[in-house]
Image (spheres, rainbow, N blue to C red):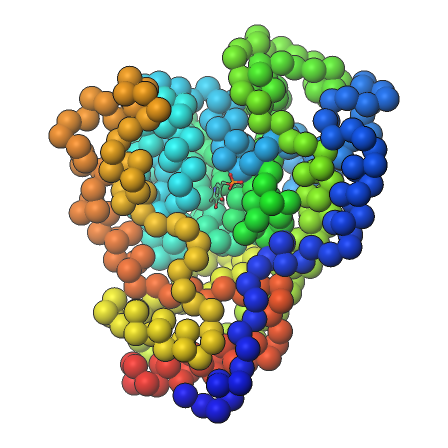
Length: 414
Ligand SMILES: Cc1ncc(COP(=O)(O)O)c(C=O)c1O
């Protein structure tokens, strides 16, 4: 270890939450002073000058879509999206095995069966899996844009739409991320975002759903507000759909006030992360025995996490330990791991035995829900190392990361 690394102080992690300053404070205080934290009440309920409405309008213009609905979390947005496109009992939804917990729990809560798919070396859904896994019961493909990198949307959309499947884009980890010049969230039929604490834009909790389809919008509004369709939404597009029993996933004014400020910061956070990332890449060049994550459109990458694979999975832990000893953040922290290892899949349980979409699949775990069914996902996810980049990182940190990577590579690989 060098003397420099003994004195080096590792930077603090964090994206949107690390960028919170007096702007969010002022927005929160102003909203509190309005004495109205509920989006649908106010002096003029037909034209509410409310934060939630403003967040929806601002986000729609920023993403370049028609309808945005703010909700209480990214998970609520996923459930609302599934309900909006009428996913229910007997249906199947294709979802990458390597994805966040709620990508599966929300499908199960709708009574539908999540069908797990392999990823490829982009750590996103392998587009070829749609053909392999589609059955007469498949309704939708849930695409996750994992950690700031867009999935390969052109072949995904082509394959899914040719088979009559809806495409749901999960942009929770990838706002402001692009694919061939267009933001994620504009490629599929409906998309979701999250404002959870670890995300590039954060209000602690919160989410949004975006779509271009009027019917999906109306059903989403009804799902998130107990089946109701209030005058505010009817003024945007008149209600055509019958009411149904929905949930309460409404966003509060206070959340929206903070989310709005963060929406205004996210492009700056992206530019910062990309600058740091580029410096790391420029200083490293190529290192034998180390392969970068495949990125379908590198220009659209948010740039907040650098991924590389080692050829030898046995070297991953020593490599991480050596980087960590040099004060480089590199320990797994996404909370993502293969769905077939998670407790709720191992038990196959829903909140009630009759509600489990796996109840007739005996013995359990059935094919398609066992580690041995996912050789590619198993291999890739055992061999990667991730280097997070945050809002507090400096170009000196980028230099330290690159020098540490070169030194550890020389020690352990060649
Ligand atoms: C890919 C993905 N989807 C959905 C969610 C759910 O978002 P939330 O935590 O806001 O419910 C998250 C984040 O936590 C996520 O990373």
